[in-house]
Image 1: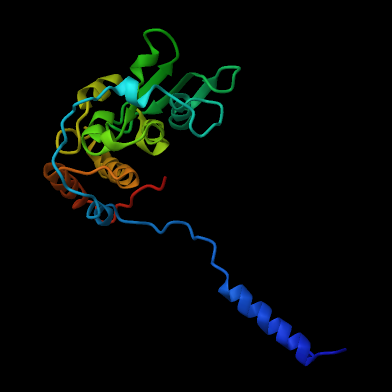
Image 2: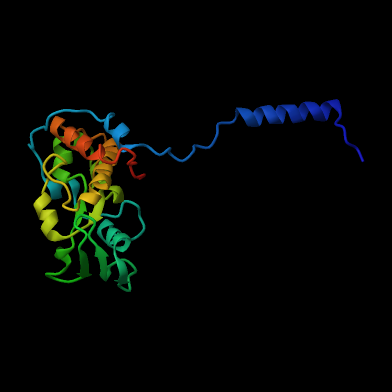
Length: 221
């Protein structure tokens, strides 16, 4: 059995190895990042005027940017609810139940007039807040992607969604204190992804929350 390579074979082998080493490596999955570290990368500025803001006209309503055939609201209901029942179209969630992460309260969802609205989908970074901190510069595609991004969407209860309004971390936090680190980390992740700035008061509030959970990581998305 031949165990040695000819000079020609050895040269070819060397070239192949060198070529393989020169090829760019496949991008590794994004390294885990601490929310406190990412927070320091965000621009700090005051709120811009709300001039020209039109939520429905500029951001539209629920869309299907991931093209899976279902709109973002139903995607999030399917993600967040348990024991969900889905319509024959495979998209519309008819019923289900979940533990609201903002309050820890068990909530049942039933699709229908007067009941669907009891489980709204919260924009973790409020749409109006984003508008006043950079979104007024975006094109239509970026606005639609932001509005429908699962990273920024969370099923919750109407009372808390209304209470929050367009508040940022300086003016509203989930009443369930054990969820606040996760909530703030999601806001930071969204703001970093879409280059949305924070106010001085907002950053201070975020730092105060994260001081209680220094190892908190931002979610990927």
